Length: 329
Image (tube, rainbow, N blue to C red; front, side, top):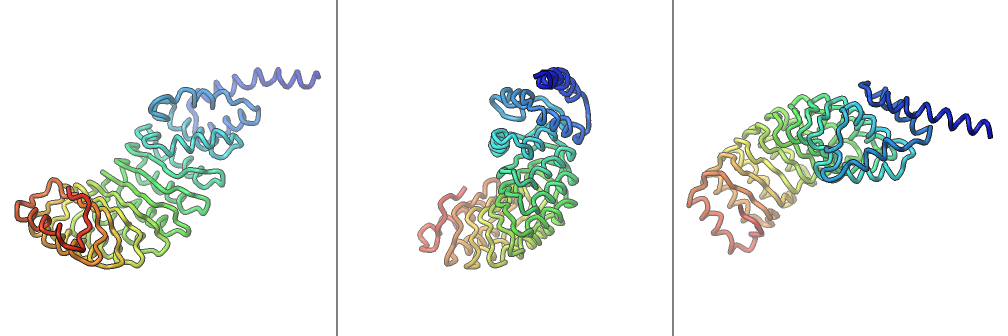
């Protein structure tokens, strides 16, 4: 009885001390150790506080430092707190839950550890508008290559990514098994060199990517040539390709249109908004849409100078038996 009482008394002193230390500025490793101490003492109050204060907007509304979030994410995904593991996976899996949270490469190290955990249930990770940079992407890519990782969607819009980390992403796409189905890299300075590296990953038979978003990534005709080469691989699983805001021009569209005519290529959604396309590009697209079979269902051409002649070329296809387009924007 006395021993139990002493244990309870010690906890009354220890738990507040640990919480005080957590409120201070430490490295992620220090935070992780402190959270594990609370776990061993059976105190869930800090975790409860985190989830009770989520409210509308999810994790981005909870004010914690990047180091604290690194520790919270790592511990919840790897500890025995099963119900919190499930809740965190659900919350992170919803859109915008880690978007614009001030996460850096430091936080990516903990997320990568969580992705490698056998307990991780993460399927959708949204890190949009966080300055994780190439170092953060390399850490995440290492996590993606782990056989325990089940992540299917990775959102990295405006994350300071360049061609430097594209080799790591390509390596992750080639991993076996590769569970990634959607990769969204909108508004990062990848350039043609980065797209070439990604295309090398797309060529792998282990790559199961279905959607690739490269809006405003500095892609030109050169990058389209690499993508076209990758997409001719058999089988190609890609169903959606977004190249909005890239100056690929008519030459780039011709390269992509040639791929669309290949029977085993099953792209269904092609986005080419503001890509510098004119009537000349429409001739190539029209030829692709007449191919048998034509798998394309959505074609977005907003913001291009197609002119009446270009629009007429595409509109005249509606009576063609091989034309399967459902949305022409």
